[in-house]
Image (cartoon, rainbow, N blue to C red; front, side, top):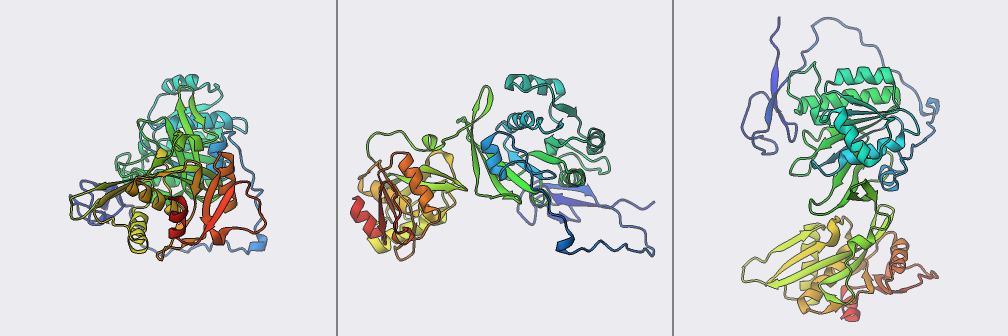
Length: 448
């Protein structure tokens, strides 16, 4: 009998090596190389390959595109309009963030369309029922406390549910593999078998996974190309606010976010998150400006906060939270070169209130206003919002979805908005005072 061949795989990046090492040569992580069994090659011999089926586009029937709505609008928005039959979604989040709570509520609403099987490798059925009773979940959800993927798929084949929820993928193992549950090979193998079953049966699957301290889904990132949708559940430990974000979605946009609030009765939707992310201050404050952002199809007002403090260090600090740090470097360079501000002796701290992460360059103008306001200790009017990307020559560049942003400003009581002048549409009544500006110096002259 031939000896089984093994290899050592990094649990963070999936790098494989023939020998063990304390540090992964690829990602540099320590003590992440684990031993796994390599599948043996087929016996040598002549075999005849069966050609695969080849078809043209006109012979492929179009799917109906039907989606199952969970009646949780924030959840449906992130998925792109609802649950897609046969789709596989991977949801990651820190332990205790509320993943199991949310998906129990999702399972409750999906029972209106068919059988829902909830598989837990972490809790017993009695423990799940205790939480379900607290959340008001009815007793019409099928439960399975199992960790062996073969037994799970056998039960799935017997029940033939329309929806399958697996909590969590790190606890499952395949008996055909010798490695421990949670290792790279086990996580990848179990996810592949579940995904294959979902495609064959047309069953919608949600796979729950934990994340590492770096924020990536525990185990390898190779799971992200296996599934159709990747969701991240984010939130601060000290806050009840939770944000569901899509980082990959084959059936919708990846810019959408869902906002929830953790309560005793479970995850409650936040219909108007602007009130949570914008501070409640009645007077003008220095270093604080309002930015009209868009997260997918949802507009919201955010606070961009900045603090400039004199420093004796040769290299001043530039710290940000919620915005790309490179954008801060660029805005500071423009303020020094084009406006003439002396920022080389200032520590600059920038924060987006509420823990929201802004990935669009349209926040450049609001960030620049906050920095100038903090440096000069001048208040920014609370009824004024700023929208625009700052170019390297100090010009205010075009932004997308301007009408939607301005409409949200008018809805929230903003009376004045500064926007790029080349983004304004002629003959449109914006219902509030909209000022088109061409350069950063124009904005500063009108605000301060």
